[in-house]
Image 1 (cartoon, helix red, strand yellow):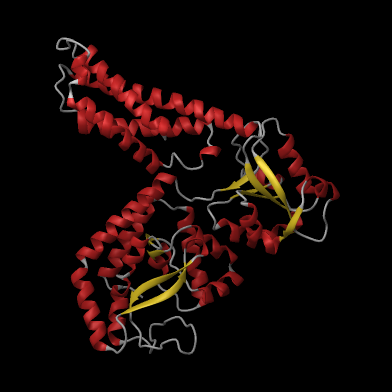
Image 2 (tube, rainbow, N blue to C red):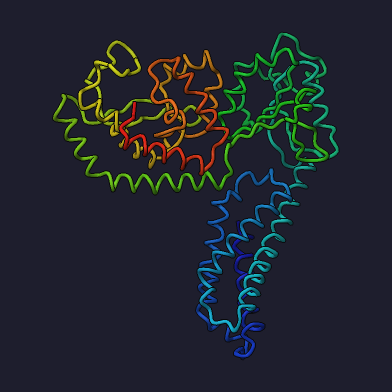
Amino acid sequence: MAWDFVAAILAWAAFFLFRKVVIDNDRFQDVNQVFRDSNFWWGIVLLPVAWCCFYAFQGTYKNVYRKSRLKELEMTLMASVIGVIVIFFTLLLDDHISSYHNYYLSFLMLFLFHFGITYLGRLVITSHTAKLVHTRRIGFPTLLVGSGRKAFTTFQDLENQAVYSGNIFKGFVQVNGHVDEDLLKVMPRLGSLSDINAIIEQYHIEEVIFAVEDCQNDKINQIIFLLDRRDDVLIKITPDLRDIIYGTVKINSIFHSPLITINPRPMEEWQYSAKRLLDILLSLLALVLLSPVFLVTALIVKCTSPGPVFYAQERIGYRGKPFKMHKFRSMYIDAESAGPALSKDDDPRITPFGRIMRKYRLDEIPQFYNVLKGTMSIVGPRPERQYFIDQIVERAPEYLLLQKVKPGITSWGQVKYGYAENVDEMVERLRYDLLYMENMSLATDIKILLYTVIIIFQGRGK
């Protein structure tokens, strides 16, 4: 970040001097003319801050130890093109320049100065970081899941590869009763599968590598689903011949051992930043524009049935953390005195006005407050209570994958299927939410949001 800040200053200064010396040479008198121009100093002060904010938005400063030089080149090139276009059209287009040719030349030189200086420093830093990893001076605490011969072979492959990938093995997790003697000689046994989350926390594990025998794959699926909801742990799996034939194995480095990497983040980092920004802006807009509806709904709820206006219920959200989800109360008080139960179309617990609220989803307006707090997103899988999650996971352990992202006010599952009345329908709706995870993007969110608005205006909320 320090280099990016300095590079932005150097690039702007070099570009400004180029403009004066080459393009405005007929009016250029001396170097002091540059320093007397207020635009020069505004650029020196504001542009470096703007560039660093843009890079942070892009996700440049995350996972810096895992970056390759090619990935760094790609990110720098894309950011430079976008940033220079913005600068050119907002700051430079109205400048007095003698010809259109000079406009193109200005754009090209601003891009070359900025990209060249920025990437030069980044290349040095990334190369130095890669050297620290390859020479084992820094690395990633790693847990090996498996206790048989395949686990030991995987360890040997990673330790003896031509270019060290940075895995610092803290130990292994025993999968069955058998433990390979050679494996015990090179690393300690840290526990069994049931201890895996505690081991990750205790040893600050950053990578988990699954190396189990083929006959044990079904046994660990649920463990992978459980871990995959964490975006702070990278999951890798040793491939078999079938994976290679089907094209599942993607090589990221010529010298590293081939492993299947489960992507911990469904979207690019910049899209997460944009999604959060849109959540905040749209929630603020919704709370302002819908404030009359908010007040009228609150008054009707208060006047039509005894009890509080708002209803807060504990749901399970991002990374399995519980939070309080807020709604307008649509049921009579003590509606769940007999225990947790899902609502139905003809549910006698729902108040008369509650049916109207549910039809037009007015009861969910307070959830924009959850979005502003950051516990929810506008679009994402609907959060459920732990009581029902336990039942869903028994039949569909892949449900835990949904906890990789924040829950939402609306979802693909709701648009396609509506509210679930029982666990069977929850499992049925799950496939739409998993499809959302596989196709997660800003464009998908916008489509879901538009269809949700149509459903609300048509009064088709279930």
